[in-house]
Image 1 (tube, rainbow, N blue to C red):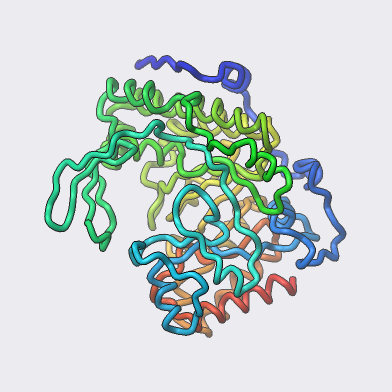
Image 2: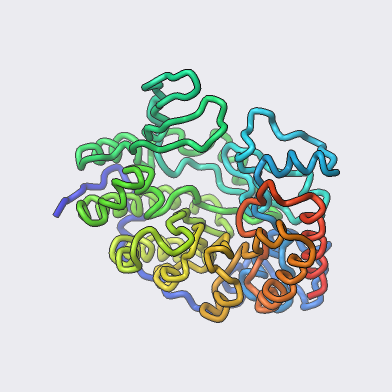
Length: 433
């Protein structure tokens, strides 16, 4: 067995939480989970409740709550098409963004880098965006960016995470990953010691104390984590093919990486929790495709579940009770394992991957859900939108714990007329419940 020594970690948090387990009690009230947020009467006013209050009430299945008006995000090309179809831009999308770039809506929210939509947000009177705490929770300090091969229309380069990739100069297609920085145990030990220590200077923004004071007065949901997970990070570190092979060929290395990442996040997030309590924690995996997970449920149980239990246990011991996993594709076969590990919700619930919100609700009565509106219905037209909203989304809304959005980025083929019709119908449906 490979033995990996974890160094420079916050000993207090590792010592106190390394073996703890937490069992989620779905009967807990909103006040018991969030003592600083007081429940209002069942006759809540959507114009009085702020985005944070709506989110917390919805995620607690509060029968008097109001569902937030949120969307997930948009392709840049879709919004540029909408400019031609009647959307009047108050701020044009930067020209340097490719058509496939993500324009963040309320669920994706504010985080480091990227472009956040404000004009569609204002037009449909949407609720405030989520905001992610801007700490660096992965490779830091960064690797030096290096051009390895320079071709007329493309380059092969090493990026700040040490990933070697092929990239078009005009950004006309997605980047193609070639390899990650970890190929051997020696590579991992170097990356661990040089780039994955929680006490590295610069992981927190320079204005951290000012942000803490702002967060204490917030009216929006505050999110800790995101961008990384116990499969997603392995894929970044090793490359997708080598990572998948690693679960079979080098299992001790996979365990060593995830064990360190778990302790690393406990120590890093512990520093945050000393200053402020977020409303939600986010773990990013993107570990599924249309027909299921990229590794078997048995592998999830062996290589991921122990670390989920440890990290989620730590978070819940620190009163962070909402923990969501972001994964595309069909995650239905691994959801029971993630829930066993402490996860309370998931998104974006892609319908084409069989993530039907009503079937999920029947299988998991207290699963918190975001997304689940079939983007294909928006492509087909108003009749299909009506069927989608009336037959699947409205019944799911009535069960609570659900925020409907399109089931990933709104694609370019969706017309402005169809999107407006969908969003106005959905807003009315939310208001009338």
